[in-house]
Structure formats: C-alpha cells, structure tokens
Image (cartoon, rainbow, N blue to C red; front, top):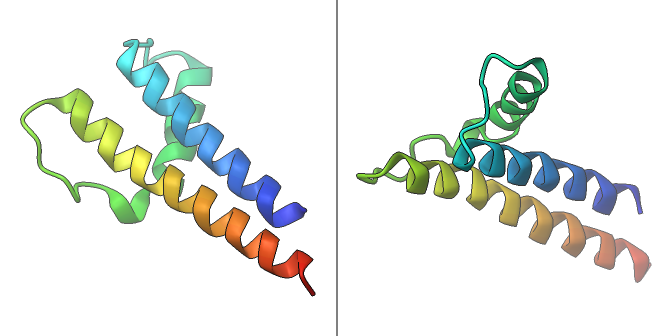
Length: 84
C-alpha cells in the first residue's frame, strides 16, 4: 500500500539521521546534509519537545518520536483501508 510505504520511507530517513548523528557523520558531506534536511522537514513539529542534558538523547527523542508516530499512523491507516 502506498500510504504504508510513504510512512516507512519517512521513518527510514528519520532513523538514518539518528544513526548518522550518533555516529558523528561528517555534516559537510552532501549525503549527510541531504538526510539531515529531509529529517528536519519530516520532524519540524517535534523539534525541541524534549529538553535533555545530553545532545544525543535529545536527537534520539526529537527524531525518534516522529518516526514511531509515522509508522503507527501509516500502518494503521493502511490496515484500515485494506478492510474496505
């Protein structure tokens, strides 16, 4: 289903950005910059919801929450549409 695939791709970008950030990828790299820009666009609404003392935990929460929500909503809608 298209909705499920879109949700999966969005969550994959967010998860990839979390991984690249935690592994301290080079932000000057074009690919890393692209992933960061896409992740920022997908997670604009959840930025700075959590205030933590460690930056790694903040990134994990700020980008992980939208990833989980996109997966849950996307798969939920796809399941609901399949029943019709």
